[in-house]
Length: 218
Image (cartoon, rainbow, N blue to C red; front, side):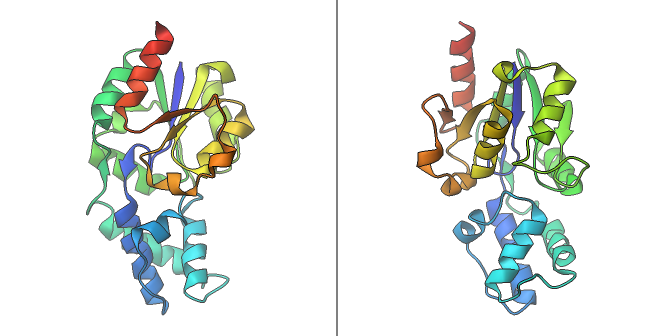
């Protein structure tokens, strides 16, 4: 089975570093600092959209030229301060890699994502990776997920998208694959319970995924 993972909020807990960088750029343009929950409600659609939302809160709509570049500079300095894999994630990936194909689908820019993957030690698990600044349209467009499925010869019935946010939910729906919601992730705050279906899976810690998939195999 093909297991396609989101990055921020699913594989790694990166919200505090994202919030600090967002606060830095907000202050740089006369805005206030933002707490983790406020930023958690803004992330998921890529760095450019995050900056637009931060700048709008700071009173700048549209975002000033150069704001995205400044945010990326701030984030570059902060991305390793607190970001870690969720507890049990490395063991979960090791267990799943023995019997499933793993892939990565994130709206994070490639350079930042690759550095996070290497820093957290999870870079070797994903033969196919799609990032937010490549040629394919970002989630919730189905393009990236369809590309990964095509490279692995996987049908929608044999593909599971694991993510924590409304963006991941919309991507799964657009592609016709089954969704596994990581309820421990910071993006879950953006998921409307009314949009969930009875056949959606959910996990409250990474190791739950091993249990669910093991029961499927039996």
